[in-house]
Figure 1 (tube, rainbow, N blue to C red):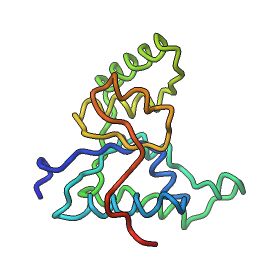
Figure 2 (figure 1 turned 45 degrees about the vertical axis):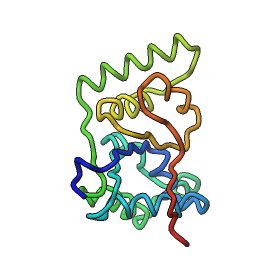
Figure 3 (figure 1 turned 60 degrees about the vertical axis):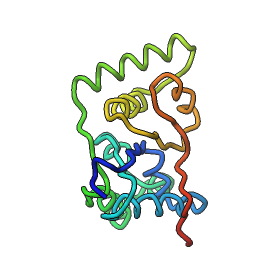
Figure 4 (figure 1 turned 30 degrees about the vertical axis):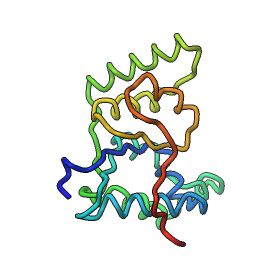
Length: 161
């Protein structure tokens, strides 16, 4: 299926971290979505901001032990390798301005929003996506304000482990 006909899905860093950390209950869905995005006949395409490359700098095991593992770094690098399956979106001034607008909106609602999360939301908004996938439930409340659904990753066909 041509890229322009696929459903646009945005992933924030929570999904990538779940994948790198091997969160067992999440892997079947994440694997299925990545495979679907990588397939020439796939019906979705996954987008993320280049800031994900910064946010996914290490795995939980490395953080807990304070020791870096080259195999985990290789896994992280592999995430971004298939540019047909994963579309990395560059940060630019318009994303920065929209991020600021979203942060200002959060203040009016008495919500707390981290700058990196605002960048993810603004990047997704600029792409006219169908869904924003995250395991960060605090972001769900922005659905009604940004014009797209914010939810946990989901699929009708999870991969068997």
